[in-house]
Image (cartoon, each protein chain N blue to C red):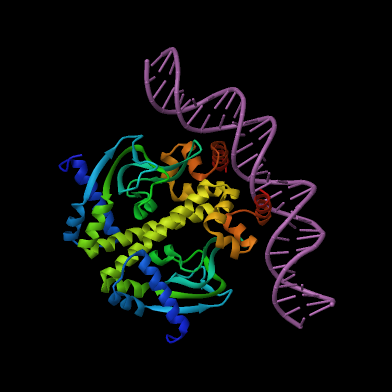
Length: 201
Length: 201
DNA sequence: TATTTTATGTGACCTTTATCACAGGTGCTT
DNA sequence: AAGCACCTGTGATAAAGGTCACATAAAATA
């Protein structure tokens, strides 16, 4: 995508707005950061990250969505969905420079702002305020992960589905039953039965 | 505990060694950081964090261990164990200033270095290098959490137990069967059966 | 040591969920 | 419109794990 494209500036604008919700960044530092960013477009089915590859980027989704999934003996197991205003990456692979054990694939035509790992680290060196932003971003991601973990350790399949309905309604609205079942760790038939039970209550 | 206590300097030394494994910190900044730290001792059964309380500290364990657990309708459900050279905290509560939904309790007489949230944030302001350390620490914690999540989403009960045997043998060695079962999300009888099956293979 | 408490092992039985099979349904392609 | 691929719903059956009951072992306490 060209820097002059309306979608480019649009995506960066959305990111800027988002950044100001988690802390401040001076105009000067925003410009430094902005110079390290690119805006990318992907089509449905494209891979943002493939197994075996080392994750080099964090993507801030501004349109569409994608999913992370493992291949377990031929079965695809979803572990996350990333929607608008969310950050998609394999953080373990990114920070520890390890090969990814899972894939991230586009589900719905995607526009995202790309943070390149090396350039981001360089920006941290240039500006403590940018590193401070990086820390706050990580704090948010850690908090979200912690919540996600509790979901899986504490709740039954049905409770997890009801949790999604309440807390992540867009997951239920935009994603197929089969994909949600894989995410919840249950068979699609079981989710179909849960769904009809919940409806009739 | 007194600052002159041998265990105090001993704990700080262990922390210092650990910090140098995740990145460098100048002697000057180490001294700044050190001034914000306290070394605490807890007895078996003590609570480091109680439900409803806002988490104000991160503890670097140097001796003994503790566990995090939810109370789900009277049943205690373990979600984590923190051993020597690990950081114990409710990161969601700490970073978002929310009440904790779970407790952290000492299982085996504990010595830990305490990072106070407010003082740590102040140290970040004083020194970008300390904030950089904070970011790297979070990156490690995020990576560990991500691995933990995959464990629960991908593996069956028996596979999870075998994973523990291989990757976290101290969990199996130091913690009772009942506590491990609660951590794995299975009945203690089931774990007992898995254990006898695994032994006889 | 004797006594009590707590943790673990094991069988019988029950509940939940997975698996297999198949019947519509929806949307895309030709 | 016909054909095809893919998704969802539902029944029958199998397997995994939970629950209850009780025996035994280990640890704590008197």
